[in-house]
Every structure is written in structure tokens, then in C-alpha cells.
Length: 355
Image 1 (cartoon, rainbow, N blue to C red):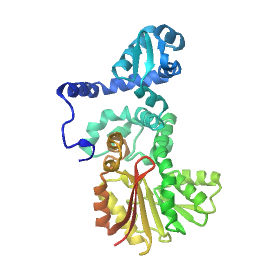
Image 2: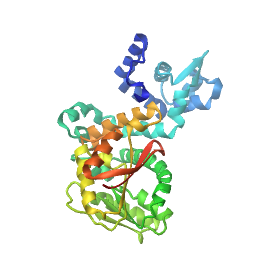
Image 3: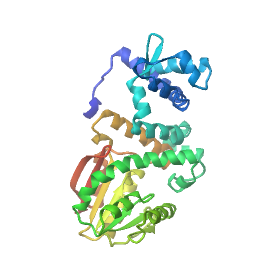
Image 4: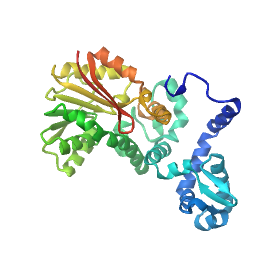
């Protein structure tokens, strides 16, 4: 099995150490947040390979000597920093915490969106509903609430979402260009980023976004500001309630959309598209599958992010194993013509036709 999940990899001593990391994970996480917010890691980083001692660090950071020394000891235990003589030096883990954009968006998403809500994860798992959403207000899913989230939470949510999609769009474009689309339906178009990207790069293509009315309103404003409102329009629709969709498109596009639904709902949406689309149209699905990641860290990140879907988004979706999507497509009457891995930060593009 990929990533070595079919065997034990730790000795007993290693395993008990890993178990302590799990036992104290929420506490250790907040310590790192505090070190970042107070600039402790940045000051250690700026000191370079020779590091910085406690006295000099205390002069630069607006915390007591006690607080700084305690956080440093925690960071040493976590291997975020290391110590030579009396100086503290940033380790490789600390470097990625400070300078790796993916780590930054994941960390902020965990802190500003997920942290408080995860107290209700067990309840969400038991009820099959997003019990942690109560931290932000009353709602059945997070999606209609995105524009009303607190400022910092909203910023972290969209930075998390856009980071992964923005890197995959340019990688996917050549495959979409090969289809020579005249009209693309961007299903679950969110803020309109893919629609605007297509209008900019496929100059003969019309794009229609199909999404919830709250998202269409935001997308239209972004499209107007980008200057593409003559080639991009929007249709408000809830795909779980719709009986039929417009059928003018020759390409139906879904990016990081179907992972927002249960497998039963994915089949329902795909069947709706199947009966609505023209027989010669193409369905393009770009998504993240945990089993298709090149590195174990990618699989870990996706499975961890799936708990967000459980606890906050809707209670019943996740980042799936790719075989689940194949099963859903088959049940809905589609076959996969092309299967392209490794787009952006681990996306897969499935190019599908009616059977």
C-alpha cells in the first residue's frame, strides 16, 4: 500500500513519543501560534546560523522572560528550533512554519476556522451534521455563511481554498484548451476565479457559473471588476434541489466542488448533469484525492482537512479516495477518458464523457 500504511513503522520507543505528540497536539499547536504572532520565530530566523540568546531575544519580544523561555523550551521539544551553547537557531521545521506558503495557509485555516469548532467533532461524527458550525452561527452548511464569517476567519478560509485552486488552474488549462470549448459551465464557481481565468486565457469562450445565489452575487462583483462581465454570467441554483439544468455548454467544469458532498449526493449531482447535458459534451472534474498524493504529507493534509468537512462544512463529505469518484461516475452513467495526476499541489483532472 502506498505510504506504507500496510505495516508498522515505529519501534515501541518511537511509538510512545508519537503518542505524546498526539496527546498534547492542541497545546503545542497554540504555542507555535503564539511564537509566530509575537515574532519569536522570526527573530530567531533573522539571527541566522549563529542564532540568538535569551537575553537578546527578550529585548526584541513583548513577552516576559518566563513566557519566552517556556515557549523556547516547547519549540526545542518539537524540533522547531535547536540550541548550540546559549543560542537558539531555527530548524528546518521552523523554516517551513515561517516561509512555506502551503504550511502558512494550512496553519491559519486550522487556527481561524477549525480550532474552536473541532471541540464538537465527536458530536458531528455521531450526528452526521456540522456541529462545529455553531461557533460561527446557525446554519446547515458553511457555504451560505462564507461572506458573513468574521474577518480573519473569512480571510483564512478563502486563502486556503484559493491557494490550492490557483496553482492547479494553469496546470489544467492546456487540457481544457484541447477541448476547444465554446461555452463552459463552471459548477460551484465560488468567487469566479476559474471563470475569470478562462475568460482571460480562452478568448473565444463564454462561461456561465452555476452556484448558490450568495456565491453568484460575490462572483458577479469580481467579474465586473475584472472586466469580463460581457463573457461571464451566472445562474443561481442549488444542485441538490434542481431537476434540470441549462444545456448550452460543451464543457461542464467542477473544481474542488464534488468533495463538498456525500458520495450519494455526488451521484445525484452527476446524474443531474448527465440528463441535462448534450450527448457530445464533456465533463471535467478537478479534485484532490488523498491516495494520489506524491508524498505522505499530502495524504495526511487531505485526511486532516476532511475533518473540516465533517465538523464545519456539511457533516458528510471529505477529500475522497479516487476509487470513490470512479464508482460515482460509473453509477451516474459516465466513463473517464483521461486521468491526469500531479496538477498544482496534488490535483487530479478527470475528463469524462457519457457512456
